[in-house]
Length: 505
Ligand SMILES: [Fe+2]
Image (tube, rainbow, N blue to C red; front, side, top):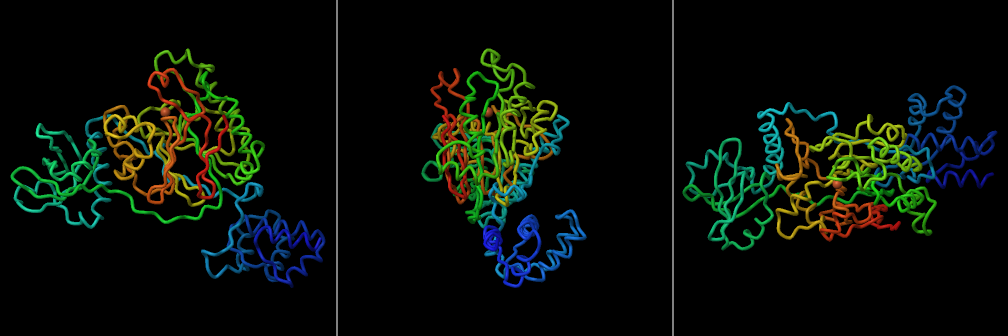
């Protein structure tokens, strides 16, 4: 029994001093007492270093008075006696393994547009929307040294020297002499900016500029033109590595209800996440998984494209979500975060609110499911995760040379640099003209997770994990025509900060 008590404390990485140990070991039900004390300390996630006689005494005393451990009174009585490690960064953290089901999820929805989206559909909303985008990104650009003192465009009239401006790109085109001309607008006026092909590096970098993005320009005013010498994007700083003492799984584009949905592979995936499938390494990682993020297109939907019903095994949307609830309902001890995509039963215009309960009642009954908008930001134990389905990839791939559906890492990097998830307005990505632009990337995430193109991609960019998850749908007729080869049932897992791909096909 003696060894068992010590073992329990050792497993919880909490020390117990000799006097406390001696006192605890002679108590009736000493093992159960050790369990409940540790449970209480861990549940409150304090940086406990050592359990002393005082802590034990207070705990034993309170045992008789408080029946419901975890109440505020209980927490305080224990916290008052806790010795906190002197160096908080080295403080011992409670283990995050799901083998300890009592460890609560440290999960938060940081940003969600579900209840914040308003529009009356009037012209003034349209300008309010662009103004919101402009002001948010201008705020980011203004902090950059090169643009600290930028001028309103209307003031350029009286200038004939070096100028610094911030504006939204109304148009960018190649002239007949193979230079580029860009019309830039701010809230005070318009100007034309010339990007001369003599400046080869600048000229090449301008290939990635798209309509409606907000950028800064350093240049020289000549007549009615500004000759650009520098193009400045808001960009992202290199972020610090955060310690990640758990694993998270990222999927999207499951397409439940489609005749090409890979049900067997998905069931193997669910078995793995529960620790019941795969080799030893796979099972060990599964044991460490705390979160499953689904970045849209959980179901195939109905009426998404012409004649879709011929490719559906479940032909109504309620049935598709019921099936999704049945499959995901087998997942234990993992929080499931569900965002919508363009196949889900949501309005198509982004930001898409969370999948409504009226369509997905059974999913909402799952105790471990959370529903968020597209896009959204969630915190997984302090790791900020930006979730976006990825519809705007279609627009970027069509507009910018060198980008493709196979290399979404290039697109994701560019979206981060532009600090906007869907910069081009009015193409294939429907954007709601709301009072606020919710697609601006205001805060730099630790993880940027997308889907939509059905092809895996991963890259660490300035410390940010950029993850594009593939699909659980085999190659569709549409994909055959365009020679798109999907990554089926190959799942990205961020295992304590290291990317691993696990195959279930
Ligand atoms: Fe999609």
